[in-house]
Image (tube, rainbow, N blue to C red; front, top):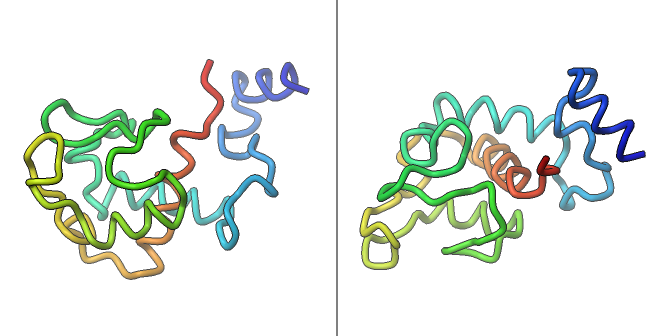
Length: 128
């Protein structure tokens, strides 16, 4: 099974998120939400300004979202969503920089939920 998934990923037959089993997603999260969240993360959510296009963070600005170390929440979908909504005060931030509420974006709650689903997925993708 791993060989089939690796082959499919390498050849582009399926995207990295398609390989995830649907039952491994948090309640209420769908593969479509994750895909939408990726587009929002890279676009109007302005997340890339601090976390980079790949989500690996920008030194001194934003945390790496692709590893399993969570600085300001427990890494659960709910924890990530709450963190995006409330932001991070400079005195609690490792970089000393503030993460504004809603990431300083004008995204709706539904859009924030999609971004949180995408961020949740970043640290759960199969590493090669």
